[in-house]
Amino acid sequence: AQTVTQSQPEMSVQEAETVTLSCTYDTSESDYYLFWYKQPPSRQMILVIRQEAYKQQNATENRFSVNFQKAAKSFSLKISDSQLGDAAMYFCAYSFNTDKLIFGTGTRLQVFP
Amino acid sequence: DGGITQSPKYLFRKEGQNVTLSCEQNLNHDAMYWYRQDPGQGLRLIYYSQIVNDFQKGDIAEGYSVSREKKESFPLTVTSAQKNPTAFYLCASSQGGTNRETQYFGPGTRLLVL
Image (cartoon, rainbow over all chains, first blue to last red; front, side, top):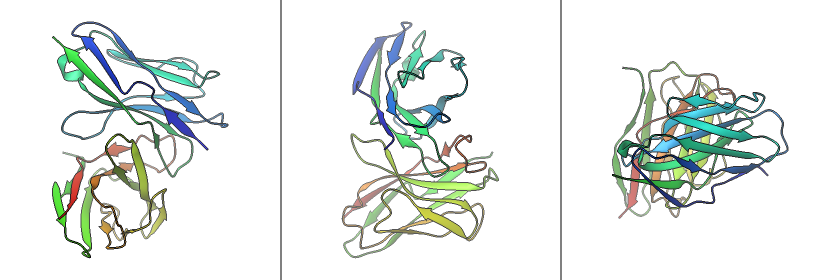
């Protein structure tokens, strides 16, 4: 069965510093997609970044980048120059088939001034 | 503005009562999804629909029902058979319903049992 594991329930970072959130997944498929979603206190899920498994190049979106290690089944999110507005729950998600996103349990990120 | 709307924001259910959560999208997306979020857990799929008049069960469909009579609407009914309905419910949609498509989420509905 496909599973997504986020082993860090909580992380903290100082404003302007860099933080990395970890995610591992288990799958036997070769073609799939990975996502990081942000859930701020408003609780609306917002897409941060996505990665296609067939692409070797790591995805980047402004201050957000991923380290995708396909063989290790690892998909970490790096947030550079952290801002107070980055404080939120972050969920890693995996998609193989048309029917579902499989989510991890989330990492709560606190940002201190 | 294009987006996904969910209503109400808060909903209270009495024992034995069915309640319906609304989800509407004006993104012209084909696929729509319902997820449930419990504290300390990620989202779990309840039902999804890739096309009008068709839908499939997700991982936790028991005690829930849906309909997809219009492309833009995908209401979720929480029936009295759902014994633990207190949770945060999120609706999502995607362009084509394949794993290539990003799912976009609505603001959610919090359901509480009285």
